[in-house]
Image (cartoon, rainbow over all chains, first blue to last red; front, side, top):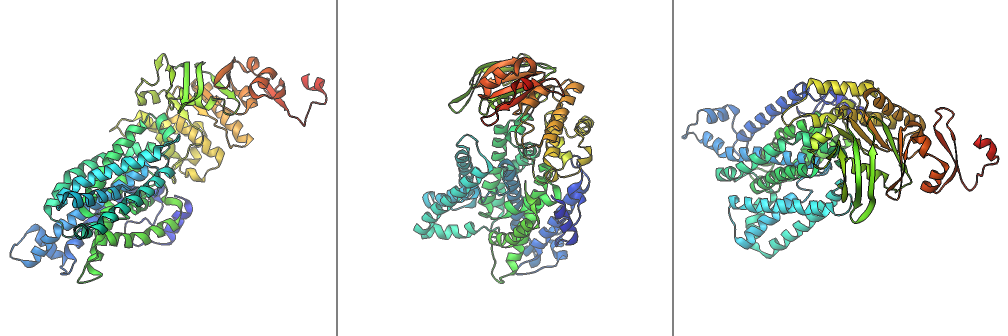
Length: 363
Length: 271
């Protein structure tokens, strides 16, 4: 981050508690765990916990936080308010899981592709998952979310492999620019194919419609549970790649010179990304912007160290998704705007603001 | 200490053969300069020596062991390299970048140690970048940045260091500064250094050994006085020249002759 960025941050106290107003968090010498960044991470966890509470309290029927607390600690089945709170738990948990998965996957993708525009939505991975799910509905008549997940994995993995192979053609291998181009092209192609299926089958369109726009409402525990093992495995893999991504960020040649096995490192990280994107997309539909905007925002707090970028993304991405979901519940009462649409609505201006603040949002 | 050897080395990009059956030794504890015309395969040789390029035939050995059979991290503790035009992540501080040179010394679960801290501190001091330690790499001048990258390579604490055109894009003062620094490193720590360098005069001044290459093969090896001659410049670069003793270092100094500047008084130049 440049000095001008830091100065700008000082002059203009940021809205929201997790955007830094001061330089030290960024400029602190940073290989020891602890210090200001640990404090920021703790603050982020608190913000997330508050949002989770708000997600249980806010909706068509608003409830005080005290009632939410009672419903969680001393559940009374006869109490209608408590039942409302409990009905909101799966949706909140799903927002936490899907948001965390997308944030982690986005951060890891930006690291592995050395590309600030890398995002599961932009590199075609979510599109691959979505097309596979549509194919599953159309060809195999799959109707349950726990059935979607397998199609989503296959689609996400296939898209990731195809993008990487296309980008790897030629002498220089998969450069950031070629990855972005291949991803954008595949993304467009996959969404066209998906639309071809959807316009030709009203039935598929109906079943697909709600899932496709991305939403975390109306999903129940069985869905959450079916995705959980994959999410946990993907998150574990990706969280352990912090050091690897730090070395890849220096370029392939230097990473190799430092003893990194670059191909293996990319493959392991990609496996984690596919697990995360596949399950997040199956659970919540293709949610845009979370994977792109959160890692960039996080870099303002952490600097370019992936050992910090990853955990911060894990905590702040679900905060964005839950926040968007909560806003979506109240802006069009008594109707709801799905979280997938709200994240883009909320995320786009934030992203523009981040870019305009300076070049600190790079890799 | 370690000896790096290329034996019957053939290196290819796709199907195009760039280095063909080359044998060479990078002598231990010395500064070796690899010189040659553009596209003669010198950078490719360095990529082969530093395991960035897998040989199509032959082998590169470090103390007699094939570098491609050694575990990557173990090799990285002995053999360091600085490629051409490295790029730093945006917003990284000098200290953090230099710290990343410690990667091969850290285990998967072993975090930052006292030894790592010491190595980084020494690298910053040796390259005189300690005052820049908390600055962002993007804010530095070209010469400072190159010193920081060399500091990262130093923090890796390898016995052998390979540098690919470390002076490109630097002005003359910074070129000399970088080569002085590498020489310090060689003299004080006994590090074996191999450098691909464009500038023949600087190569002749700073090298213990010069390896001259043409069309993917070695055409001459030896001390600068033995190797850098008018005949070599003619055969390797296709350029007429006069070679005189460098008035500062006594090493060979090449005065190129183009079509427009023919020596007016050859006798004066030769004396």
